[in-house]
Amino acid sequence: MTILNALLLPGGTEAIYPHITPVNTFRVVFNQVFGGNYERLPDRALYSEYVTPYDFIDVTGGVLAP
Image (cartoon, rainbow, N blue to C red; front, side, top):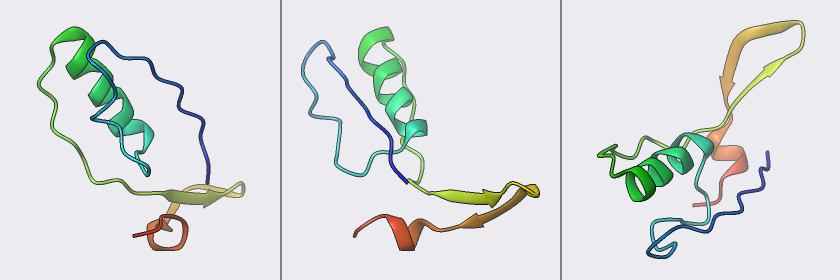
C-alpha cells in the first residue's frame, strides 16, 4: 500500500516520519499549520476486497517495515 505525501510545512517537516499514514499526516498538518492539539494515532493499514467492502483485514505487519 503506497501513498504520495508531498508536504511543505511552516517550521519544517521534523514531525513527518517514513511510515506515516494519512490519518497522522492530517494531524501533523492541523497541528503545525492551524495550531491544533491532535495526538498521533496508531499507523495501521487496513484492506478489504471489492465484494466485501466493510470486512476490513489489518495488514499492517505485512506492509509496514518496523
